[in-house]
Image (cartoon, rainbow, N blue to C red; front, side, top):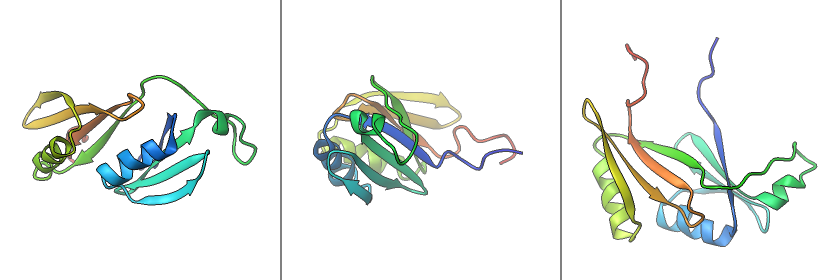
Length: 133
């Protein structure tokens, strides 16, 4: 028995409009749901990125309360042929690439930050696949 994937990833942000401008307008993630002063939900492929105002999520009564702080990390996956296009898009958007890492076997990833200083990464498809898949 195993999980198929992680469906949602949550980041706690300080300003939803700032996060919307970054993730939707600059990175192009489609908006699924938006509640002012509470949350912004975006689609990333078949996954969902949840951006919550921590205090609002902490006070939740609809689902269990949750919150966090600090510089969290998540990685977006793209094909090796799309990887250089994403790198160019970040550069065109004046988003600083902090580091590019060569993981060997032709796999690269790059790191950058969102407005809340969360550490974001773009990785090539196949990097963490189980052998034989």
